[in-house]
Image 1 (cartoon, one colour):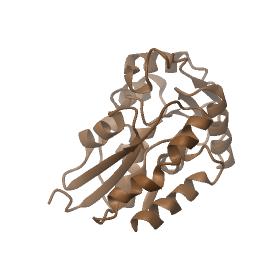
Image 2 (tube, helix red, strand yellow):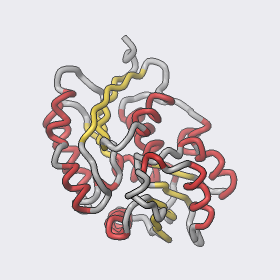
Image 3 (spheres, one colour):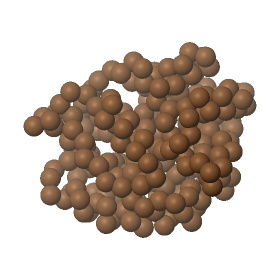
Image 4 (cartoon, one colour):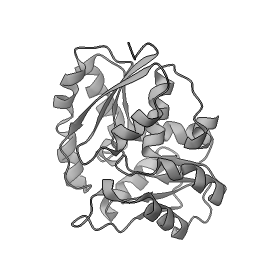
Length: 237
């Protein structure tokens, strides 16, 4: 059995493989993962709500085997319905699967709390109306968002999962981070784990990303402690 330490379930948007690959790359020895996806089109509030409508159906795949945690791996999708929306989705996951549920937005809140930071600068690949919902969600939970900005991605010609890490790095460097005590790169579709350590060195502040926080929270809630230095201060603590 590959899952003698923990068995994780992951439900993520069907726009690309980045979240699944990020988990598989860094799973500790003895931790296994099963995955499924939900249909996804565009990270507008309407598009995100349409995606979440498939969550119950996606949970069906995890009923047969016991999982330590089942994660809904989408940041904006797990907060788009309001301040306690992540808790509502966790309840659905737990009722449908019989397993412990988590969402990426829940994981991000826990990660920021673990790092002891309170003033994130946030960068996303979302449109402005989704960014505003995310800002309100974070601030409701006690974090002062010093700035939140989209990447200016052209969704017609390029999907979120195709955005190069170098572009995210360059946009982060341009982002106004005055007064921030951490950086949050939001979206489980982004391929950014390999630039966490670089950004923490260059910015001299902790960096949280959606997939890093999701993996950390899944392991934490499964009782698995592991240090992965290349995934930043969160995984070095």
